[in-house]
Length: 302
Image (cartoon, rainbow, N blue to C red; front, side):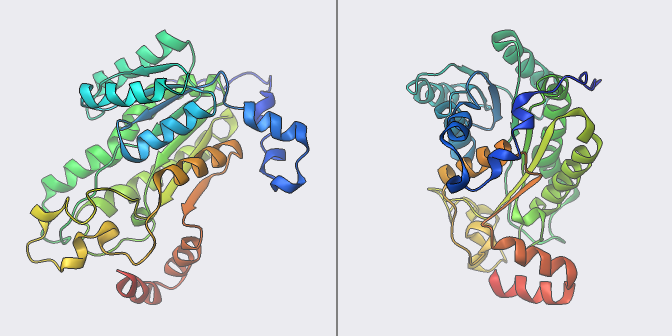
């Protein structure tokens, strides 16, 4: 993969990023109009988007006027999601793909470019949590988690980066609070998300001069219909609270549509990181500065 830094010609959308991060009350009507039009004509590719947060992010882009490429393994559920998005009036391309296979990732990006001729946003949303202790989690289980939660983003990023650089676009990696502060009983999940966080920071540093915006999103537990039940088969020997979202983290569940709106806002302002809920930033800072106190806090809130 070769990423070529674009010429010195600038993109006005990039230059406006700082102005549009101002408080809404300080914006002129013209500023607001520009903000609403920012995504019109742009193309966003969202992986793992047949449901949950991925669908909410794709829906937010579609409502904002972007064309959307959605992808997931199941063709049936993906097409159902595409039909819902098409009701919003925009263009939607649904491409079934397993992002643990490089050839399918390459085909996904190629189809997006063939259809729309450009790519402005990649959201690496694919991921799966788990339950288990670190010692009981096998090397194979760690490898599987890393493949899905981390290496899938590597594959997609490598395939999409040349196109994103051309448009001075946005690369969004969906991490987790567990990728900023490891909690108990999450199996290989935290380790895989820590890897994604490190990869995202390295990309941000190395691609800073290319004009490509790189964003790490680190959310807490997101509302799900199957919350508390999806890990029943992994709960042997673990406390019942570990089955809850976030391993039982005592923080409010996040609405997927609300987080999606925050992601678009963070992209618009070209922010390097979105930790959500915002108060978690203080928590993460304490953990990094004072590990012993941080461990005590994690035990108290999970």
